[in-house]
Amino acid sequence: MSLERLFASRFRNLQDIQLDLNPGINFISGKNGSGKTSLLEAAHFLSSGRSFRTLALDPVIQKGSDDCLVRGELKKGQQRWQIGILRNRNGERDIRINGETCSRASELAEILPTRILGPESVDLLLGPPDPRRRFLNWGLFHVEQGFVELWEAANRCLRQRNQLLREGDSQSRAFKTWSFQLAEHALRIHCAREQYLNDYRPIFKQVVESICQLDEVDISYSRGWPDGVELFQIYENEAQIDEKRGFTQKGFQRADVRITVNGDLATKICSRGELKSIVWSLILAQGELNGEQNTLYLIDDLASEFDIVHRRRVGSYLAKTSNQALVTGVDSRILVDCCENEIVTLFHVEHGQILLS
Image (tube, rainbow, N blue to C red):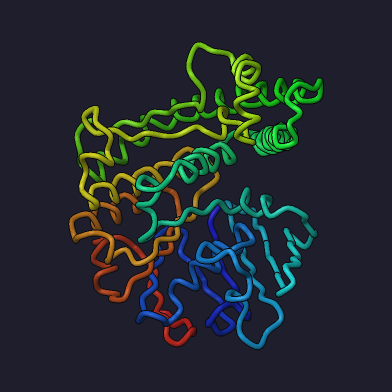
């Protein structure tokens, strides 16, 4: 499924816009501050109900307006979908899918999976483990039926156990019950993550070969508690230690992903440029596991991220996939050069207005 048409109204500095998109690669050029990144943000907003640039809603809604609206038309074969979201400054939202009201933004994400690639993407490797866990969860959300419900149940148990720890109630029957349920859910999440990585690893290595051309790049996973030990037994043995600290120290919420190059941790031996290409490979490879559900890649300022060789490798890879991409840059000539002999659609942005080049 691809995003065929994007509408945005009262969103950032954009004028009321309509973008008729190519199912493949779409380049968006314009000066800094013209609204290029706001277009990517609008597409992300449509798929998730939130911005990737800020947690606050006020900057997203155009000055002088009470709300913003983003709509999209999607196509898969002969099937068409209409989705939209309206949000006001009070945080209230109205989500519609084919005219029907929906209560969960995750329903938008199921229909329109999106991934962001840009200057901050390298933090996936350089930053703390939480983004790497979100990386795994994003993949599982789109391929594992029922994962959202499992994730929510596990987090509910974790919150309850942590609450009892803070209350000094680690000896109660309720505490043992929550600990047992948490351990059960954590094991199921671990098994799902492990299976996902087993399916994902060969695809990741193929993308690395296309983009990075580094030797022996591999991905591994630590589940968040020691191997060979049941998690519930750890919870029983370490209840008093957890109580002193006020939180659960081990479990699915402590998992992490490691990237190695020739057996060494990538963050220890790779240059920043090499780490960028690895991270882009990580994210691009996820789209290949979605099966018939295409991924929309939102790529911000490609030219500033890579030299001409790597830009062409990224462009060549995108052209070979069935996924869709919106790619921004200042100079349209540099963008077009990334995809030699490929059919692309080129837009130009000036003062929040869209021009078809």
